Image (cartoon, rainbow, N blue to C red; front, side, top):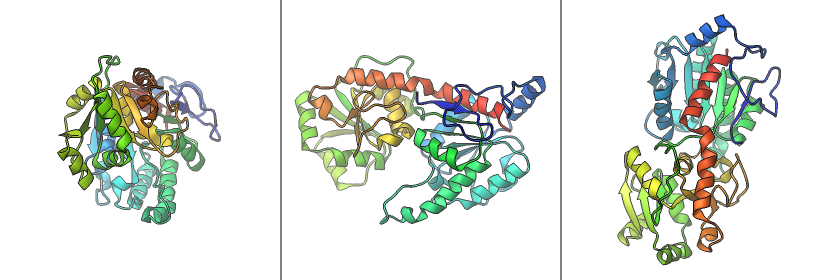
Length: 364
């Protein structure tokens, strides 16, 4: 299963426990006074930290705030300690959100101050650090980014992350604290049942860079297949600044809808047969776009350089490895969409909310 939970006693166990709730650090059940303490920890004093600006991390936090109410704060290096409140703190971490080069040393310093005064600090690691080739500047910043991620993990009272690769790294580089592994949920709705009536539509959804990577992958064979099958490509998201994108719009190969409210994105995904995404399979569990497609039972055509099973996702079962399989008739898009929908169910929004509650109760 893609979700995992563990409470390590002395050292991190490679086989996490199946459940985590009502536990002392020594593994004993919580008593009455402990429940009172847990209730205090989950008081309205909870402050959720998010990066300044817009994006998927903010969307995630705002949705979670509806389930676990608190105050949302987008801190900078100049935000005084008093703004962090007197209760628990929940950090949504993505390094580049808090520093233009992904090295927010000030955040480590601030969390050190909070932990010194006894504040419970939970962290959702949306990203750990950049992995780039040597000719990219991020490659040389990698050691500093790794140090910050390790320091934050060591400071945390508990942590969550979205894929097993990140969890494996955190277990090796942070202290033995309660944690969970949960692929991200959809930021644009979660139908209770999989919509079955599908139109001949392909959706390309996400931010400009995510969608631009998709369009760079589409060759003449893809466009020929869409014409033969009568499939229309619907583009949802902010405009992409590129000549190739402009040519696609002008040629009417794509129907550009621009940015849409979440409920309208949900409506379009509910009727789409396919969704396109370019993303590495070993971390696709952290993709909000893949989560949105899966939550709506869309058959994702995933473009990548290598395909292997990760986080419970099997190529050509939970997603199509490119478009060759569906264009040749080897894959049934309805079965792929159904498998993705079923994979998604254990980590819906309410599952994340329950994980946070359990971890806050069980953590120092």
